[in-house]
Length: 437
Ligand SMILES: *[C@@H]1O[C@H](CO)[C@@H](O)[C@H](O)[C@H]1NC(C)=O
Image 1 (cartoon, rainbow, N blue to C red):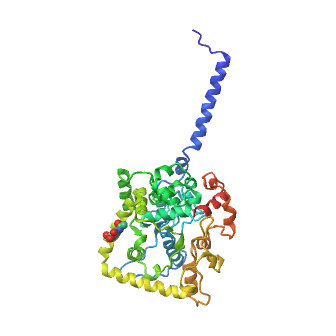
Image 2 (image 1 turned 135 degrees about the vertical axis):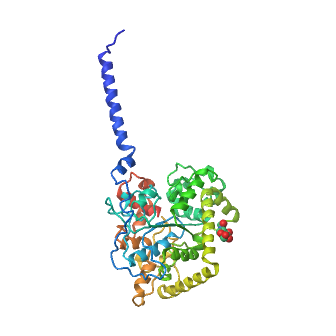
Image 3 (image 1 turned 180 degrees about the vertical axis):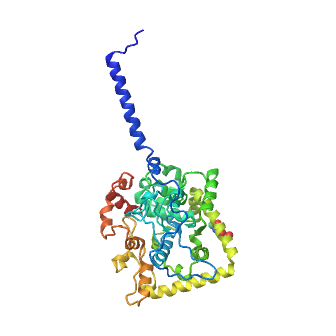
């Protein structure tokens, strides 16, 4: 038996060995990037026991019974009146000098990536904030590391049939799966045969199935009967002190006020980012049922938290709730009369001040906006302006470089969704933002 390998075989072996080494090294650097990076962070939450000092004297009045909460995490879900909640939080935080963890040059934390603390603008190890409230795919440990341990976590859910309709309409141009549907009514075609049209590997497919469960950080392709779903719902109920329901928006706000020890004036709002009624597909009862069935996990989630909401309303007192909702409505309509020219939202082309235009889905102008009255006296002028300022412009005012420049939309139309991939350049991701939000 010859134990000596011929020269060429030895070479081959050597080369093979080198190749294996290089491949392994390459893998160890490229694959588990998450682990590699997370090791460089402190293991314990640096800010668990302290509250960041506020940048200016707070203007809130303490009531006799409670101290207003200033540490807030709002998980901004998609298509669920969350822009209206965001406007409330931004105003509250600004008024009270709270420290926001803001996204880096977009209005989301690198969504749909799972949230990581490095996605926060100007992040430094040990950074600690009062408020996080922009779109993200939730990731509890990374969020908790940035906030004091007494932070109040809340979110908002909406009937998944309506979320689906809205999401389908809003994002269809960035979901290639919908491009293959050629019928007159794509939404109906999809819901009639979802299995035929859906592919969980499709680009941006999460917009088409259980988007809220996805936003909360879980697997949106699970079946509602899967025990993992029940476990996830329990985890959500433990982590989030409160879940608002968009269909009961005002009741939810009153309960929020109670939980956070806020004032009625902190809750004033105008509906932001609403759609022109004619662009909303009226779902037949049959299609509505199909949409709920298709989004079965979100439907289960929604029913669970609708029940907890109403349990809270009952504990609060139904009569008392009705009175509070009435008060809020009166205050809101007073503000509308004071601030809004014509008293209501108008079509995009009728918004006179371009800085007040909300972002539109690609190729459309279906989102309504507001004209502010021109002769409002101080201090109401500032309040009105803030209440009417769309999300992107508000974030820009707070220092996020959202490059809000009009006219950019048209240019983007012709670009491909590759812009939105995680490998895209920062400039492309900014363009992608236009497509997605
Ligand atoms: C939400 O809860 C209320 C009060 O129990 C109930 O009347 C309503 O039907 C529920 N909504 C859904 C969609 O389950």
